[in-house]
Image 1: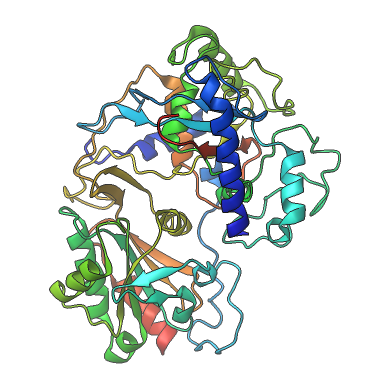
Image 2: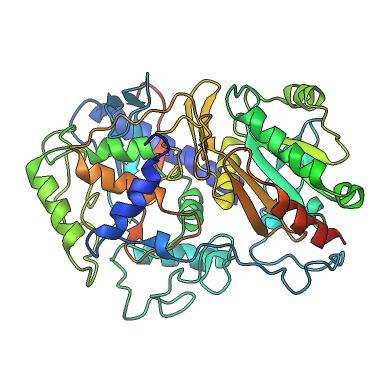
Length: 212
Length: 269
């Protein structure tokens, strides 16, 4: 079966063997949602971010203009995040297209209040100039879209927080999860799209809720 | 904290170089009491990517033993943000250090010389960075894990395999103290059969699907044209390690998952 992954095998086996094999996968790993009761309320400016907010990571990022970018500046906006790399020939263009499908599915008002983040795995190739060029090629509206690069160490941290798996398999070549993440206006993981060309209605519905 | 860490890293490097220079090329040189220098080399990993069947590892240094409760206690005392009641949920789940008596107290369920467990990847990484070190990469860890007591590359050594398989099947009552087992070829204790260990890239992508072959739900979870599924299926114990790591998230804590730290050494050493 071509779609079988080692991870799948892993889970099966891990749960089948002795007690010395820890089984963290059995633990509920659905990200806690702190947003249910006030999902549609706009966030107050100085409200402290929840403990599980990705916005409070304090990692230095640089955007496509070469300017420092603080994730905390996203507080108050639902944010769609994709990790990718610019020279990717296979799925990354499709994934970017999927994020654009989310953007297109939104009402104009919701679209204007939503942010779209592309974070590269490959900061040595994806310089600010290269990220700028990618944004232009893909006609990304930079009032909503931001392309980020950071140190390798911080990219691993960010991927780990989002649950993105990736490996560098050679110069300019990576394998990685196809995973698009929706962060609620406080930066807590709300839901994720796994795979390519998945339905975007759930993302759109939630974003409309946050921005109503 | 970062400048201090960098500074201590430089110190560490000098110490390593000074002592490694004479011992280089010999078996298990000992640069610092708690570190072992590992010669670079290459190996055929359990899991192979097409066109990259051999993995090259550069020389590095690795803690001889897993980090103990005692050392981790000193770390959380100096870095209160990593204490049990203060840590951010983003970085450690609710069972983080749950067997300790308190924020800065081990208590009866955590002996000082036992390996620290129930620590998240983020916490393990922060500990290593505070010492001017880092977590080993998966490739580095798997490279040294292939050693038997006498050979650097004996992944199917019957004695080691038997010990690991026995461990897999044993109910884990209490953890032994670190350093109780015999060291392997590199002078490393407890790589097997005490605790599982975090590595920097535990969440590397190991894929056997062509991700563009999108035929339905559950397919195309990964991008990676270079991936393939060739594996050394006979190396069951390595398979279990890869499988376990793939099941983790960075905030998870597990009662028999600990870690040790690595350090860079200069090329040519």
